Length: 353
Image 1 (tube, rainbow, N blue to C red):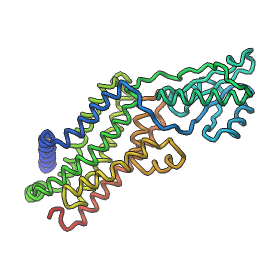
Image 2 (image 1 turned 90 degrees about the vertical axis):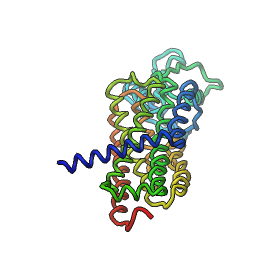
Image 3 (image 1 turned 90 degrees about the horizontal axis):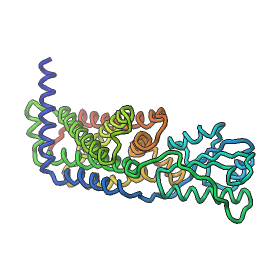
Image 4 (image 1 turned 120 degrees about the vertical axis):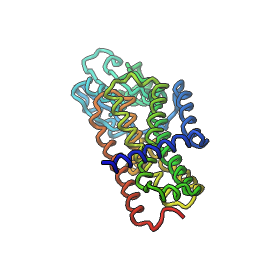
């Protein structure tokens, strides 16, 4: 029992040391503050995203011809049929589909025949989707100019909260990938690691301390970003899910950062590698919906699962049962990365020069 207490005390002192050093580290301050201020600025404006393939939900009687027409003439639309419009509207509000169309065959006017609910999270996509659906229905009814259809948002989103998952994904990745890799590599360069290892401290305690150091910075930054973007009122359940996602992702990217620092010989090498792989890791997560190819490619990157999970829990409404895939994927990445660390430590002749 005394050995456990002594081990925990050592880990706590190492975390405390890293926190103090981070206040003097300009790289750490920049990694934390730049995305923080950027998220505050972007809470006032909407960012333009690439146009992607759209998923439509269709409900109502006598819609078979409309469904066949869309499938035969529009490749960037995929169709899901719903028995009730409320189910389609809920799916749109939850982010499962992009729009829900209800057709009333008994309406006297063509404009009144359709109720169309759009995903209003992104303003640019909202108007692009609105124009495309209007053109689609005009072509279907063989009209030279489309009538004024009834478009409505499925749910109201704040621009600040809609951009928050992007900034959290960017920041969490940077903390683990760049800050933690640089932190351990700096201790190797300065011989601090060698000095620690000749005391009662062992490498496993150092790894644990670095991991929780990253976790503390991640939680603090995420809470500040969430406060600035007004998401503290989303409800206890969604807040707890957010903390679980952020914490799991912190372990994933701190593990990746530790792998980089262990496999490199100097701080400059670690920073170079983390900088080189940063954009290839973050980019697929942000453009996953552009095409089927990017959707498949993104499945191999933990940033994709982090972004999708945060997007669902912070931005969209509805059920969160489909978050299990993202959370389990992040846990799997964390296990793989720390297994690599464990195997390397066991087989390495020396961790310091």
